[in-house]
Amino acid sequence: MNTKGFIFDLDGVIVDTAKYHYFAWKKLAESIGISFTEEDNEHLKGVSRIKSLEKILEWGNIQLSKEKFQELITAKNEDYLGFVESMKEDEILADVPRVLAYLKSHQQFLALGSASKNARSILKKVALINDFKVIVDGNDVTKAKPNPEVFLKAAEGLQVPPKDCVVFEDSLAGIQAANTAGMISIGIGDATILKEADHVFSDFTEISNEFLYQLISEL
Ligand code: B16
Ligand code: MG
Image (tube, rainbow, N blue to C red; front, top):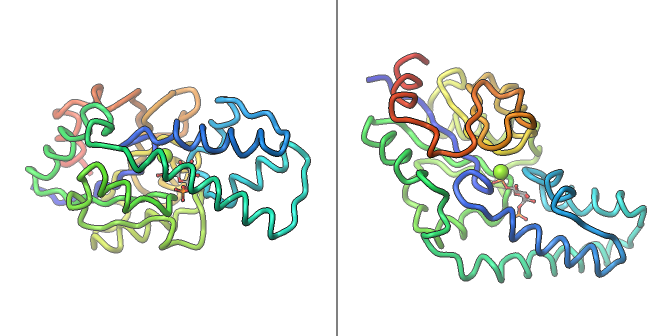
């Protein structure tokens, strides 16, 4: 059996923390008079915390002092962590445990590749921290998705060449990062948004063990 690298994004792939980011960004935006919808939130998926606030300010055409920027971003993260605090294993997205177990039982290497600086604490909350051989998150990279740094570092950690890696991602920036890294990209979500991916599924319930087996044997 070939050993390949399977790299998972976190938010929107393993857990649905996007809704918590949404609540926290909405509170922040509205506190400075900017309206914020779920559609706006879509544009922040996979985008780093700092870049996200820069985008919101741009949308509202607002300039802030460095101090105020820092104050708001700290408050946003505290609000977000307030939601994360009560997360349990039942917030793992459907069929993710089956896919992880299948890959592990076929001797495949698993990594996490996320833009989030909170990735490790979220993985602990949902008891998945020991499932990944390598974790690369927002604390380990200097270049945000669509730059491939996060996935290349994950492949390096797994000691698997990028061409033998598969990335599961819910954001367009993440799919572009995987493609630039020379990896197989699998979009989880809306096929119209993720059309640059090699394959798209609306969620893991649509990904069969046969498909996973094919990935393992064909790469
Ligand atoms: P944090 P992913 C990304 O995680 C989220 O999609 C994005 O909405 C968030 O702003 C970013 O992490 C930073 O997260 O504030 O926790 O450092 O999808 O790359 O796992
Ligand atoms: Mg994501």
